[in-house]
Amino acid sequence: MKLAISGKGGVGKTTLSAILAHLFAKDGYKVTAIDCDTAMNLPSALGIKTKLKPLSELKDLIEERVVGPLGTYKLNPKVDDIFEAYSVYNEDGVRVLVLGTIEKGGEGCFCPENAFLRAILRHAIFREKDVLILDMEAGIEHLGRGTAKGVDLLIAVVEPGSRALETLGRIEELAKDIGIEKIAVIVNKFIESEEAKRLIERIKHPILGKVPFNECFIKADISNIPPYRICDLEPFKKIKAEIERLCR
Image (cartoon, rainbow, N blue to C red):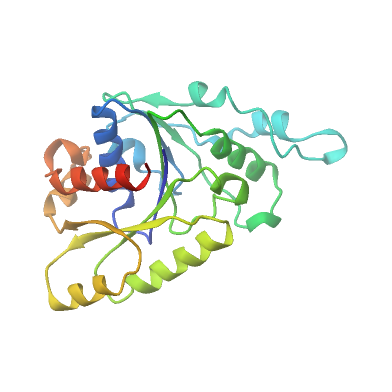
């Protein structure tokens, strides 16, 4: 099961990614979580104290694997050994990697880092009882047509505000451009109101769940504590169940 989690900055993508990784791991799945966001906060949200080296900074390795004779690039470089060599495991057994920055150039950008990082994502397709969670940037520029084919579900995280549908529309456009067909939505920081209710009614994609606003997540972030250790996980357990249902 390959999940890409997207949304504008600050909506809670990393918190959601960390909690889902925790819940899937506790349920017996082999989980790999890849931080594709330039903020690179996913390792700390998963309780990892050591600083991980972003794969995009492996300049010598990228040169060796990607650059061919006469300045040509290998579009499918060898990356099968990268996962173990540059990942760490947290206390739940979740394998964590940091992708790092990728050039924004769509399919037309063939820089060595692009070829290498996208090969990493193409390779990250696992067995039936495995889960891959991609904590994306505000957009989904890390994904191209070659990598998007393996994505089972693109999860858009939105807040119940006036810009939520605008953000969702942008994610839909990007997903359509690279061939992702299945999109679902999580409404985070939800506070019951008529305005929020009207907004949700306008969302045409399946809604995996609504996560109520809770200062516990702010406390976890400030204290650098994984949110699943101190916060209510019931909304997220329901979201996990919906994800499993949609990805069957």
